[in-house]
Amino acid sequence: MHFKFLNLVGLSSLVSALTNAPVTHGNNPHIKYRATLPGSSSTPIRGAISGHASNNGTGIIFNVNFTHLPTDSGPYLYHIHENPVPADGNCTSTGPHLDPFNRTETPSCDSTLPATCQVGDLSGKHGRPISGTFSVKYRDVYLSTVSGTAAFFGNRSVVIHNKDKVRLTCANFEVVTDTNSTTTATGTSAASSVPPSATGSPIATGGAAAASASRDVSGVLVLIMAIALLL
Ligand SMILES: [Cu+2]
Image (cartoon, rainbow, N blue to C red; front, side, top):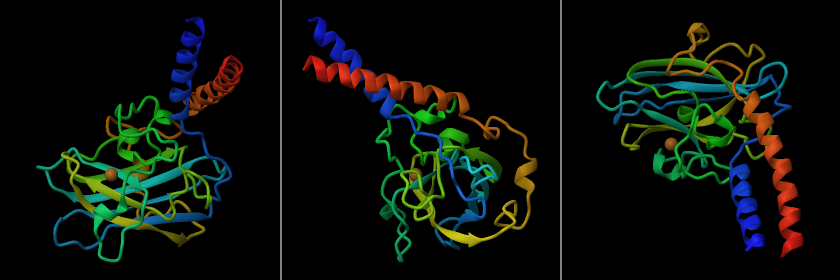
């Protein structure tokens, strides 16, 4: 009975820790990826999202600028999805959200604990567009521009959903050769002057969560060893 209890505690800690995303480092500040929404006839939504590392290479700074968001379909959601958009533009083909640590959809993302959210759940972590123009800039320390890593987004897509999660528009990230990493897709830096608000998180979130994630992982390793000894 005692062993069973220990196993349950260990397993629940394991599940909890596995959902935490690690902070990414070593991202090249001179590489930028941008996804530009297509000129679709089925939605008026336009705009782009780009991501690049800051000079210290930790995490990714995103510049988001979506326009013409209809007033009757929000608050919207937008995510980085696992697969690229195929040539026919079908957003359904982008598959699920980028979720390399198998956190899955439930419970929904708690923006105060971003390491526990799906890596690709940008609106969950940083706020949902409401209507009109949505222009924000934030750092997400869980995505990466290092090709081949779990949180790499450069070969993936962004999808905007209405409030009922219907996929309205989507676009692929493509590399942008740009040594001036503060230039945004539209050539303006309006997003950088937007103060943190209910719909946008401030720069440099997640430090504490990251430290906690790393403690959790150590704890889990000890628990796994203990479980292995007990079994
Ligand atoms: Cu999505």
